[in-house]
Picture 1 (cartoon, rainbow, N blue to C red):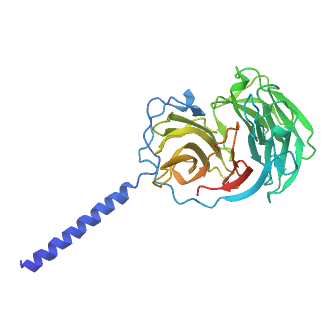
Picture 2: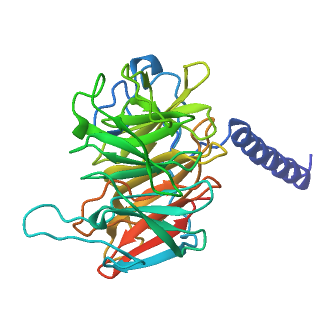
Picture 3: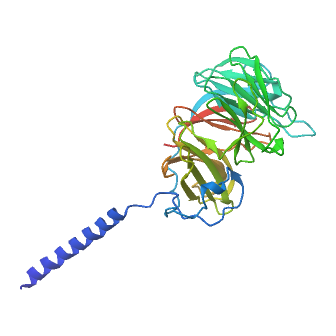
Length: 370
């Protein structure tokens, strides 16, 4: 065999070796962002706790790597801009010398694409059309309302967990009170621990300490004194229940648990290790197709030398079947002193609407993570 022939064989062998390695990597598959083994325990702050029936975190969870660095920010469309005050196109703000500063605490979106802002300082709900223009206001009937949500039939639900301790059902057209469901009773030892209002079909639920949801009645205004529970937030496609919890805030670890609605069995539990310290879970919801949205507030890396980090919210889009990260984007975090209950809501058609407060007023913006 000549030197040239040996060189050709050696070169061919190297090519085959490279192809084999590449084929092996392809066959094994890449590791999805955020897909990590779970610990045996998951203590910490929560936005839905894993119930015993959901299984122990750490079993049957796949492994992987931390999420990649975020892609360039996607366009954030301004939906509406409202100044401070009590006028028709304004929202109330209060900064008392004693007591908590207040501004609009919650917002929701109707099935018709309208936005509803809880303007509790001015004692009203402010309605905005799909074009972002104010369409009118509806009076509030409660003393300390903190949360608003919208039923599929358009009924507006307003939570007062502190004084009236009820959920008011309001007609979206006339503003008339259709019913008033008390939140006290079995499963709710302390109404001040309620962390949200939810509607599933005709049923009205309140969330207890970011964990189980307690049924308090229906949209006709009939109370349910038995207070049955479901294990998490229902997805809008009616197929699952959602729960999430921060495992370790300083190291940026949290997990999401999804329970199949029909079987009652855990679909998956998946941990996400983020490269920044966590403050809170600000959003856990789905759109009409079942796509999951997870919003996490924390000290985000800016990619700049100074400042290297800044407060913000990282919004993730998650696959409903396995929790794989399908996209992500970074959004601003409200840092003014006004108390808030809920700043983000998911749109039925996909994407989110969120409110950003400044010294000039409130800006409502749309954003997406795909």
